[in-house]
Image (cartoon, rainbow, N blue to C red; front, side, top):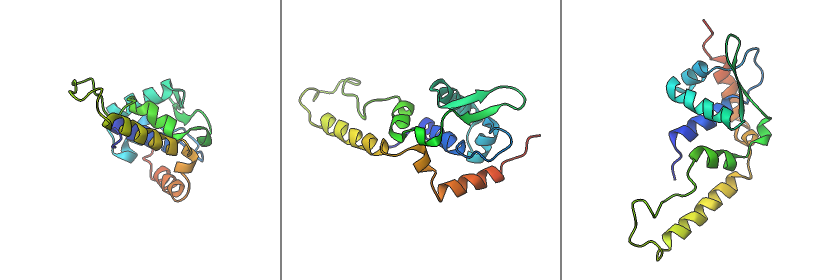
Length: 148
């Protein structure tokens, strides 16, 4: 299984926002530069994260992004389920499969996907940014471009 680029960026944004030791909020431009991401694509990701209530966004001078809750409140499996926007690994209906209704593969894949998400649901965003990741995030924040 490979996560979409959208999910990858969503997770990176959430992880980046776990760092609280700053005087000003993080911005889309900053995050785009830090991760070598398209600003245009990141705007869509941030908008979606805001719609889910996972991040707070403030417009205008001095505005930016922040986590809406403590990092320990975010279950990784739930985040990825929502970001992926697809409940199944395969769709037997499109294009129509001649084996549909008589195939064991779909059920096996569904079981595997449930196990994947079940494992991730045991972990939070706080777990994902535990050491040494937290130190790497701190380094990114220290290297961030200064506002002009």
